Image (cartoon, rainbow, N blue to C red):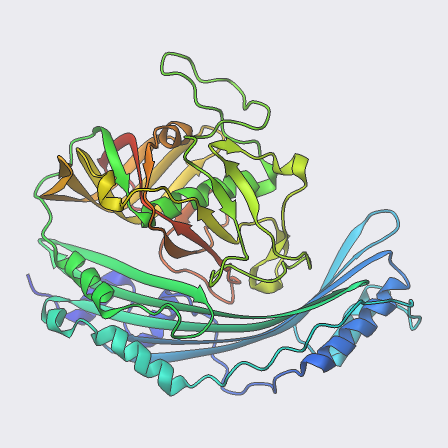
Length: 499
């Protein structure tokens, strides 16, 4: 079957590189004229003075400031586009003697905007004597960003699998470079960090009979442009995946032994972490024996959530982590937090563990994960194979903490017999059932984790998409996960929801 490429772009919601920038998360308007970069020591002096004036009125004061530049280059079969965004601002958080908390946001980082913000909070000309502690070493300015180099990189990602190009009906590539300097200042503490976050995304699409097959390949990290780039072999494998012939008919519904590939595991444990962290909600009900009815209410912590093989840690100190940082948006130093320890949920409320994060560093503070690490096992991925299916290309997950019900949508299921693929591949499947039962059935975990960026979900519920979807009008959530493959057992069926 043949199709005009522009018509096919319409089915994907993309008609040009500029539209592609919107689809892949660069919806903010471009800015052709940038303000001059702020000087670190100058910003620090402004913030220290503001904190001293607020401290004369309030017993608790914190200033969080950010100067951020984002450049995104996208290239598809119809052309290339560039989006440039600059985002500066400062959030002052104060707490009065009666415990009332107030915040004020200034959407620019200038002496005048800072003065206006603290005046709005009731600051006077009086200044409290404050020891801010030892000043950090001023960070060196990041190297200039060469947009021509970014364009070359994106063009290479687009054409890396040129030998397969005639059979690909749509191809796209994107490189996103997000560079932020963040200051956190309060009495007794003066912190500064530089965060450079990189995302590379490749999209390929082809027809499989009457239906299009679309695959995304993405890598995200903190550091330099060359630290973890996508390889030609990985891009070619993505193209081969969309060209792979699917088995006619649909997969028969039923309980199966399944190997979840890292993309599926990443979605699953992101949903688990959100449930555990959101509002300090109670953990899901514990695993009951098959003959026992499900308990009516969640037990006291620590609740048994899954197999003793499962340990989940939120670790922003991991090297190269896309969601990593030196300190959080409340000014607390980065430190690992264990969420699940050998299958048991850690009581975060009792331990006082937690951290505050602001989308884009300036939105409302929330308790969220940073860089999740699912502890790897001690076997090769191929040793997980037996009789059953490999579930690949995670699409989205929906988890309802109240009912412990989970649904994971996957791009395909690959049949296994005696540890080897049979050649039967079924598109559009989903794994459904009890989350705790699914995790309790985990009997092996691979020793080879893969890192993924985690994107913000819709504003309601815990339906989490796998595709890149972050914008400056909806501030970005920088989070990631290192997830290995694992083997479990659950109910597999043809995909019913395409929402």
